[in-house]
Structures are given as structure tokens and as C-alpha cells.
Image 1 (cartoon, rainbow, N blue to C red):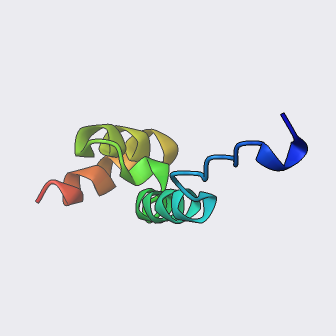
Image 2: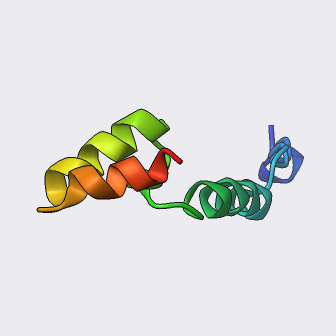
Image 3: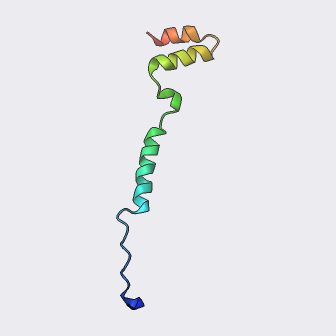
Length: 64
């Protein structure tokens, strides 16, 4: 067996550029909204009413 007859390496089936591009697309879509806006409405209203001094009246106006 000589050095010149070594088998060639198999090429990658998926390029890193394509993986990175797909990852960036999904991250962009998921990062479009802050985490507190991804929760259900009732949870958001509960967080809002607890965080503000007059939060209860604000939540009541949101229900209209």
C-alpha cells in the first residue's frame, strides 16, 4: 500500500453555512417577541396587575 492510493475523505453532506442560516431564521422568528408576550393572556394580565400599583384597573380596561 502506498501513500498515493489512500482513499479520499467523504465530503460533508450538510454544510455548516446552511445549518447556521436555518438556525438564524428560527432564532429571528422566536426573538421577535419578548418572553413575557409569549405567555397566555391570563398569565400576562396577572403579571401586569402584580407589577403595577394600579394594575388591577389597567387589566380591567384590557378585558373590554
